[in-house]
Image (cartoon, rainbow, N blue to C red):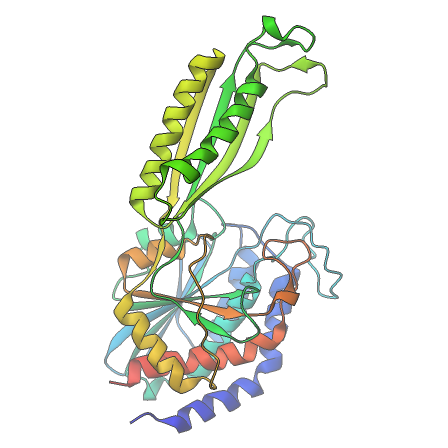
Length: 391
């Protein structure tokens, strides 16, 4: 039988600590720290877990893993990322970043606070829970070397049977939830191309091996990979994020640097794009008589929601949430190092809407709608309880 009274109990407790959750979030927001430097953030988490009487250990340099031991049963991990971004905040909020040049522009401050809220509530009900919960506060999600990979190396997933992740997103309306199955986020690869030619005066281009023109052709031609060399029913993106070459208007430089990213959902497409980029670069090197260095880095794989576990999560969510809360959406080409967790354990990564008025993630003007916090704490607390209690 599904114990509906437990949902009401958790909901009421969430309402009682709503202000605490908001205050925690604002404190984390004021003191953002980038990957593997989340020392103050880590200490704050540790202090609160001690207050909740939840034992913990440190993993991944600044990561914190709390452990709630219930009755005999399976162990579910739930993860929140901790790190901020090197972005100067321009929100004008009264609790704006006090660490100049850094900002929580991706909602990780809210993720931490949400997980702390869940930990506080469920710590009061551990005798009713048929299993255990690992509260995983992970550093350095935003880029390599990723915190998930390091925590796995240090044994964070030992004895974990299933894993949950979540992210607030402006792509969904406030408090709407999407639970996908299969590949829900893309691979996150990076590449660097260094073109070395022979520079000279802009008035005599016939005497140089122009790396700028070579770079221009290269950028155009690699886009053909997606439109003409990848199956149109499959997904792939190649985006250039940085070009650097030359200093003045009338001198052709010796060197141009290009940096970008590749996003796909399938390993076959991932390898195809890398291979085709190599072929184009080899050909252009001969055409323009330039030396071209190609550095391709596979970072995180595609984030996979286990079909069976995600179906269970979805079915329980339907019983917990108000009617109409669950919505259908589509996989996104954003990436997440939660993908490393999803390779090791049956996982389900959940997207929770905050509304488009919050702005774009990774923007200096991103403002999270705090009305999402208490309902999410209530939902995820109930979800964890019933995942471990219901048969």
